[in-house]
Image 1 (cartoon, helix red, strand yellow):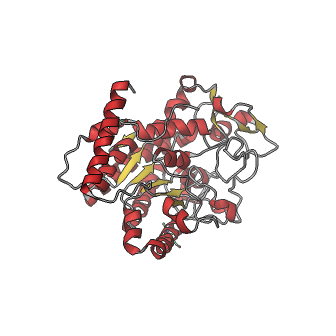
Image 2: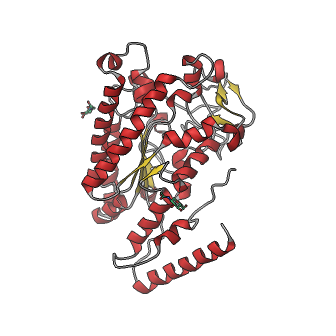
Image 3: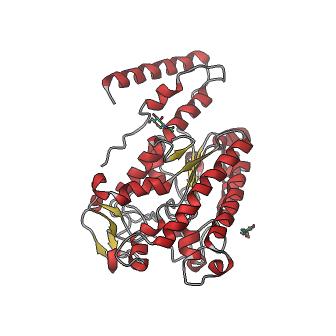
Length: 395
Ligand SMILES: *[C@@H]1O[C@H](CO)[C@@H](O)[C@H](O)[C@H]1NC(C)=O
Ligand SMILES: *[C@@H]1O[C@H](CO)[C@@H](O)[C@H](O)[C@H]1NC(C)=O
């Protein structure tokens, strides 16, 4: 950003400050709450508290996390929700099942995600005890009762309405259901295109439920390039190219998700749901890793066998010495460095990545909603261009 831009942003914020002060509207300086739903891509450690095989609570997971400890995040360090929290100026969300999530900490939000789950109840059954999406939504309701008891029902309602929400589902409905074994029950029941239509119709119900529970700004991610993760390259492709069937699945799922979200928003009459095109976002560094400073996007940092894509990442696995130059941490999940690239696209990407708008535009719009009445005529785009928090240069 040039000096000129920075100073105009600075002046804008001085004016913003004045308006708030003059209007006498109590400026809640606290960052907005953040709620997370979904699978292992966004689980911050709920599965640590469950009897399940889908867990990341042992080394070398967390090797680059600030504490150097495994936390339950499926990453060498920070994951996508952590980086979104950082972007909106909040602390990281705690797992809903964490005993420390009490009192004031509840006001930061909560993470309800659970590795292994999908849109469908029969996804991830092999992981035994995980928090399926219906249960995550029940916990969200329970959370609201707890916050209500803390700050009163009106404030609680406002906290939820003004919150940012992230939901990441769908990958496991292919990887850990339809394509889990040859001739799976779902693949005998549905041809792939029909299965996708069914998934989208079930996903829609989940989003409607989120809306009913008070969510008003929801980032909805589609599936990444499922066939290009090291596990699928290792198991399903001859020469290491992306596995065709899973790519076809992602290719069908993502555009229909965007369309469903567009329709839902127009029914509601507001852009409540924002589609993040995880496929395009990931494809950038998957197809051209060198351009992003990675040596490879085929081989996982932690794993064994072909492309380090076979089995789990454990203390006994191969481990790359430098996690900054690998796009994939384990056979299925990106490294912290790749997560930073993903969140940068969520924040500032154009409509190829984010529909109908990106996170920086959301932040600009919503801060206006909190502080100004509808007659206010501020130049929103100016705020959208300001760096409102943090810096996403690669670390
Ligand atoms: C999943 O299970 C929940 C709780 O048992 C149920 O309410 C819901 O309808 C189920 N969803 C589907 C798609 O069957
Ligand atoms: C995304 O964010 C940038 C500012 O960071 C803005 O210039 C751009 O117009 C935004 N794009 C969309 C589609 O919202």
